[in-house]
Amino acid sequence: MKIKDAELLTGLSAKTIRYYESEGLISVKINSNSYQEYDEDNINKLQKTKILRKLDVSISTIKKLKLGEASLAHQILITLMLSGPLLWLFINIKNSNYEFIGINSIASIISTVLLTLIWRSFFKQKNKKIKGTGLILLSVIFAIVLSIGIFVGISKLQQAIFVPIDYLMFAFKLPYSYLIFFFKLEIIIVFVSILYKRIKNAEWKWAANLFQFSKKNIAATIVLNIVLLYVCLTGITVVTKNKIMDYNFYSPIGTTYSYNDISKVQAGFKGKSFKIFKSHAGDFYYIVNFKDGKKINFYQANSTFEDTYLELQIFDKLIMNTSKVQKESSKENYQFCDFDKRYVDRFLRIIENR
Image (cartoon, rainbow, N blue to C red; front, side):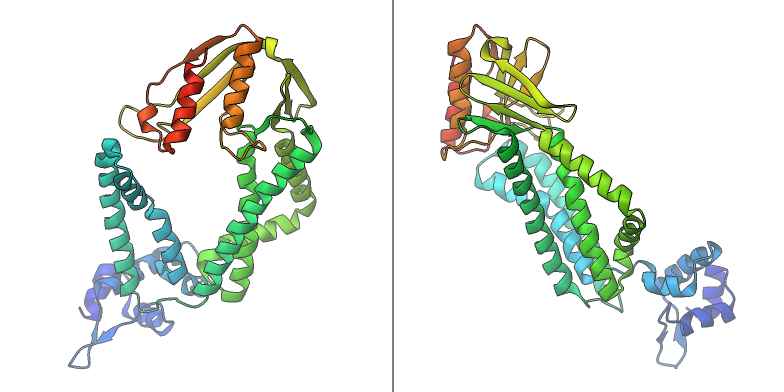
């Protein structure tokens, strides 16, 4: 289409369109007759530019934004996130878990369509924005490793402060364990802001802004991190062969329970969400109810045993042998558990132990 058509479709004057073209906001093709041909992509970019200019966004900022152009690193990260359903489809087929193949297949088809559209749009870009891709991906890997290190470090600190030598197991309780994601987010912000300074990619500017905000409010940032670290460290329950010690941020000294303080035990496997979605179906739970109303799920606990979940089986035997406890347990939904057979059998033995 000619420039007059572009004027009609965008509501911009020919002079303004020429100016945006000279600033590199659009790239117009030349046809065989040496006339400029405006395509749909040019029109879309002109319309977006018009809206941004009405919002007083400067030309320099619009040039940095590149009107929705994505970098290769961004494409790879989005691809990794959208590949989840495809990975689970492969795992379910490999494990002959056909219960969720239907919904899994639908999710995989949607992911495939989205990935196709995203990559198609990327390949149509005149500027592929490949610069810094390797550095970004290496930084992501390093950030993941550092995040794992933080989790291990907090666990070691908990063990050093609260866990006695003769412990059976200890559990980092929910929802306190979720707070570790805040520290992971901080790591990501720091790394991305450093990358932004080197690459100047507008996709990462949000991290630089957050980092600058944290630096301006450094005292509040330090206090917040100390408080969150304290909450994480005190979110622990320790089990020995004769007592259970429960700690939290408002009671760092902890509450000590004997096995006789247990009123009920609930053990079993989680079912499907809405009878359709797998979600956490098959996840084992072992919830101990105390007489004061406290409930703790000991399913994900740490111990010195190399044989996984053996500590949970020993704990269950101690409870059932040393106190008169009501036990609510069921094998229902065990077929959804994806664990190795020996672990599923161990869970079933715990359920059947009364």
